[in-house]
Image (cartoon, rainbow, N blue to C red; front, side, top):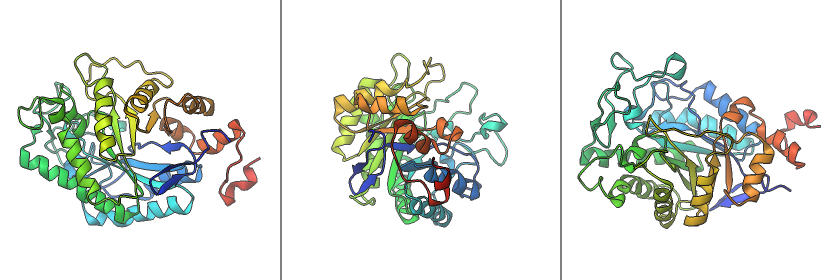
Length: 354
């Protein structure tokens, strides 16, 4: 049996293999509600053999959406359509996970296929918020710097979102602290220029994330895992660095976080990112080795041999598949064949197994 298809447990949850479907926004909801697109999109990845399916960045407040098409979990009415999705995923042998998110200053945007730019007026425009009143792009509208009371309210929104996620049937929560969204905006010295207890020093800049972790864990069952996705580097001088990420991971380990999902970039538009096969794997390796915490590797991982090599080298514990899963929803079934592993297929598909 390959490492890629060796089970791995986090608390009470056992993943049948090391393949995770990474959260990928579909921009296809209305008022935060999931629909048949999300059921088929996420459900097909469960049929395809992945162990853990993590739903796209799901907004904890309406203004926390990247676009008007994002999913949300800020009201109880969102729960029922999500239960339909988690049941299908579970019934087909995978673990349902959800990424809880707030877009901060990178919100109020058009859907990507209509340009993706920030919407400045009209029914799909709203005031963005951030750690500091600094726009992401010079042409973006200036975000509102959150007050202390508003920070506390946002922490509470993550907490209640986690409660709803549990009701909806999710077994893993991932906190989205990457890609230039709100939590990342607090972490980074480039976007956080506050002079209160949430700005300045490293400990102050991570305070917002730590408070969110504490709030979620106060309502999330101790036997279920919590992951955190980070941008391990901003790829710019004087920005958030891999050294900062290792230091943060040590703090999160003490908070009983189960895994650090190591992505990068997204908060500095001028960053020069040397994207290529496995380009973020060294970040996962550094965090895993230096902070002694499980990590997930993500970013242009496109074939079984590459994924297996990452695990064999001890560079990560899980392989997060994103765009390759869009190209091939059944990537795990195909990867098993390449690696010579005999895994269970859906009964309805068995006649095509050989």
